[in-house]
Structure formats: C-alpha cells, structure tokens
Image 1: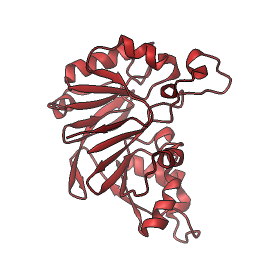
Image 2: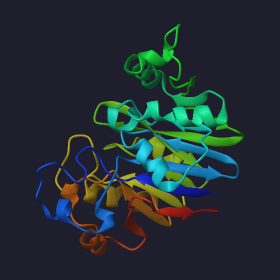
Image 3: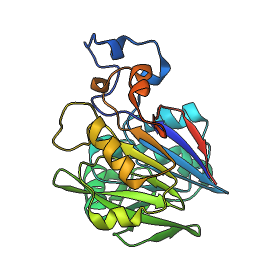
Image 4: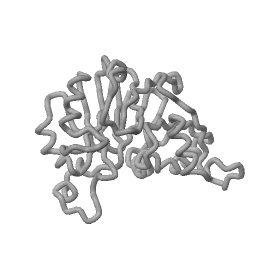
Length: 254
C-alpha cells in the first residue's frame, strides 16, 4: 500500500493573505500546505479520502491519473469542496465515481452540488454514485475499510483503518471503542492543529498523548495550522516515532 499526503493543512493553513508570520514567509516547502487529504494506492485500487478545495491541484501535482473512489470523513467544506473536479476522471474512465459517506455527508453534498443530482443534467457535470456508509466496515474492490468514529467538537467524524494503517483528521475526542478499533495500528495519521487550546481539534500536546496511547510504530501529524510553527522547529520537539507530515510525503506500507 502506498499513501500520499495530498494535503496536510487547514483553512487556517499557509500562506494566509496578509499574514506576515514566520510560517507564511517560510521558503521551506514543508510549510506550504494544501487542505488535508490523502491518496491511497493498493494494487490497482486508487482512492482518496476527502476532496478539499485544493483537490485538482493536488491530483495534478502528484500525477494521479486514475481514481476509483472517494471516501469522506465528514461534511465540512474544506473536505468536500473539490468534488466537482472528479469530472476529468469521469471523462477518462467513462464511468460514474463511487462516493462513500455517512448519510449526513451525502445529504450535504447533494445540497451543495445540487446540479450534479438534478433529473435533467447539464452536459459535462460530474457523474457520481453515492454509497451510504455507517460505522460498520465496508469494502471497495475487495479492500476492507473500517470506520473509526471520533468527535470534532459536537460533529461526528469518521477516521478510517485499512490493514495496519489508520487515518484520523478533524478530531478532539476519541471514544474508548474507537481506541479498541485502532489496536495494532502500525502507522497512524492524526490531526494536530496548533499548540494553543482549540474547541474542535487536538492541540500538539493532546495529539502526542493520543499517539502514545495508540502506540503505533510511526505516527504522522496532519491538519496543521500555520499557528503550530515552522516544520523544522516543531519536528525537533517531537518524541521518537512521531513526525509532522507534509504535502507530497509518500509512505510505502506493508
């Protein structure tokens, strides 16, 4: 399995218009972050988790020419806004795109992209096939994906586990049952927004504590705000086995 970080930032990411902080002025490419999303390649299967506003640029940057499915963690715009840009894959592959999400996520998508779902469609609109998921495992092309429920303040969000890999973004609380679902995880991706307290995201300190409890061999932090600090500086503060992810980082697992 190959995992590519399409984006590791937030809508409070970098560069921010008018911001003159060290991160926004940094020339280190690791401090330039698109909205959080990953691409997973398992054999012939190519899927993405979330399509934020930067989806098109992310896919072009990574040279991804095939996409078999989109899986959504939750309905916030910074994770769904790029759905329209699946249309080149519709054209190239000549089929509808399977889109997986909880019912509330799919309902939100149907409202925000209503032109996709009208009875009389405008030529060239994205073609999707919505597939409702819940907290039970599901399969895509024979690959089992286990949802990992977490909370983003009061909003339910799904993380996902595939084999020994677990991906969690937009969380500030993990139920005990979800910790049990992650037992044996070897590679963990977890959100770590900033150092200061936040109403709906793990801080750096909280994310480190959660990562230690899960006990993966390697943890990568994502969904990073420019407020966290420079990549090279924060990396030096992290315990062994924990690192900051960055846009374009690729992991070969298993």
